[in-house]
Length: 79
Image (cartoon, one colour):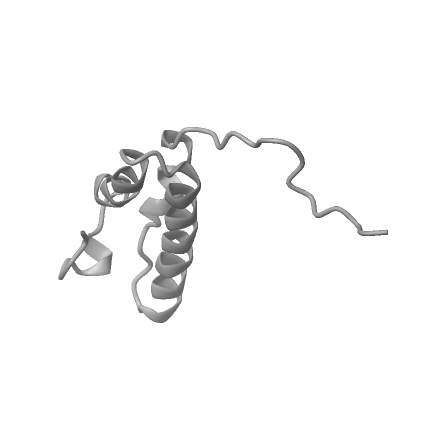
């Protein structure tokens, strides 16, 4: 979805559009994983570029719906 857009030109609306593609199909976990991966991509780019760039992926976290957990997300020990 971001295609050939230079990373320094990406805005939070662009990042949100990527996550909304997963949300529209009901994949809230996937949308959150996409957001987390993009946070790391922008942080890596900021470290490599000589000019600091904002991290629009961080800005959209509160725009995503909360993940509903069913039961315990912790692994259970086997006897």
